[in-house]
Image 1 (cartoon, one colour):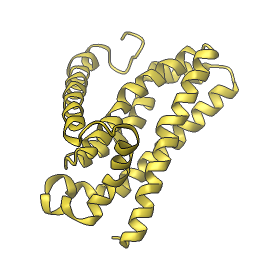
Image 2 (spheres, rainbow, N blue to C red):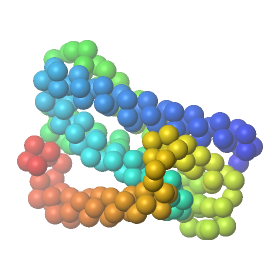
Image 3 (tube, rainbow, N blue to C red):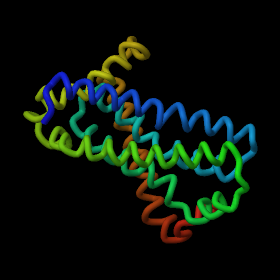
Image 4 (cartoon, rainbow, N blue to C red):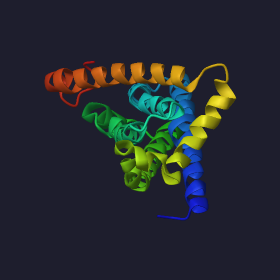
Length: 198
């Protein structure tokens, strides 16, 4: 385990990279895709945004100081790249697209996101213990992960208590898990890895 100062620096760097790779880049690509009428990239990014909403839910769970937020953080890191590579029909159609700046940037971002999520997953796995033990959760190594979400609340949600935000985060998580379960147990069996039949 790195020293507390090094760990804090690494965690804050991870949050900064998350903003760049999981929010800013896909948002810009979605706007670019809409302007350029690149339907395949639009569809992949819409799917990505649906899946990556788990990351936003995780931030609010951390604001409320809920230990299982560490579990949802790991889930989000796994599911975000999967959402971009899973669809056989969309990826085949993307490969057949003629070369363009948008295609190059999107493909580069997708690989970069996959690499970032993979490294982030390895970095965060040791902190899964924060989800299952109140003693571990109270430790400095776990609490350092809550600093950025708390600062986010102070910047954007000063009028709301952590408990209030946590309630809505739990509700959003329940809806997310129900939707994911429906996809896995119903839609996936019906249409496989095809996104165009949604």
